[in-house]
Amino acid sequence: MRNRLKEMSMFLAFFMLHALLSSASLAAGSPPSSEQPTLYKTTFVRAAPGKLLDLIALYKSRMAAYDASGDERPLWWRHTQGDQWDLMLLFPMGSYTEYYSKERVSRRKKAAEVSFPSQNEFTQKINACSAWREDIFVMGPLLETVKKAFAGTAYYHIEIFIALPGKQEELYKEREMENAYQVGTGRPENMIFVRDQGATWDLFTLGCYRDLKHWAESADIPKEKRDSAARQAGFNSPDEIGPYLRTLIDIHRDTMGVAIK
Image (tube, rainbow, N blue to C red; front, top):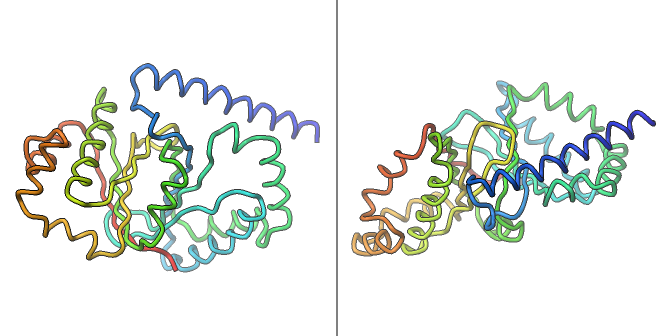
């Protein structure tokens, strides 16, 4: 027990130190986070062959444990086309100090001890049902904003980026400009999530839509309205948005998907 408490103290100390270093890094010129005040863990999972429905069922069985621990349930969806993963789960954490506080850790441990399946069983089953997993900790919008975006929606579009060297901040600003363009054309804004640690991605944006038709409505926007919105957002024209974006990125992946019922 003494060793376990010592390990936990070291673990918490590490995250406190990391949070301070992250703040210093942002101040030194990384993508701004003042509009992204909330910490999330994002997990991408590819199912083992023939195991997607089993994988979904496993995560559904885990929701009661999140409730019992006081943690927020993940916001999640499954891909229909695009990248190589099957599920995206967005786990709200708030902040490192909040999520790894003694009280939260204790509640999480107690919930895991009485949950079914147990934590060990859940991990074993996830390992058996998944081909690979990728985690990235990101700073994103307030949880209330994210929940509001997910409410009443069932179709999702995520764009994941690795910026060219030294272009992280400019890429972030370009994403904000595209959001201004979205608003100017009457489209939903994309939520921006900036990498803190984990996988290689610098940031991703997530758009939430009612359905496929809602997402595709951009094709019906009159050219005059698109031209005006582009200029107001800082672009010369809508046709220059994509080419400009590609001057900032090394890797860009799109994925579309649907809500899990």
